[in-house]
Length: 207
Image 1 (cartoon, rainbow, N blue to C red):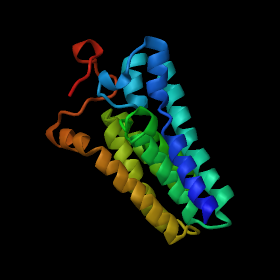
Image 2 (cartoon, rainbow, N blue to C red):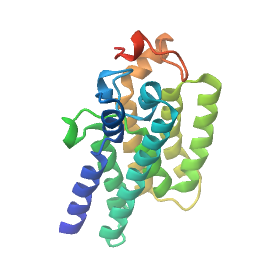
Image 3 (cartoon, helix red, strand yellow):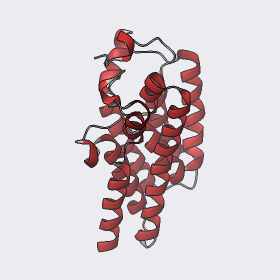
């Protein structure tokens, strides 16, 4: 039991590494959480630092999710639950990072890494639809929510995936919807920021 617990704690600590905060500090000497949307993630990195740093943050955040699941695999002795819990722990670390006063991002990139590692076909299928929605609407938040909502459904639809993976993916979905609750309200009011929209207030935080 000690090894699985250690894996979960390690996954949380890994998830707590906020690459957007670190890059913004290194490149511009700023706390990215005080600029743009105030979110420590790839989308806000795109707004504040540009495409290159945003792509790097996205890839590193996805890799956190992949690594966390594999940590769970190595320490689980064949259990499906431990890799899923380790993935959830990494997302929790990204959202509430120990190293940055528990103020992090919304966990979507890390969730992509987790879900793609746990259930590649359902995650890819959901991802295609999510990307299409972003292309058509330019709402990243909407695409993110579509991805996490459809992945559990596709896990049920496609053969070969267990109910343990379904429940794990559903928890990830609930995490994402909770973290995006303000975005959901803005979408309902038609006030959500679109991808590529000009920054408000010269890049300072928009509440």
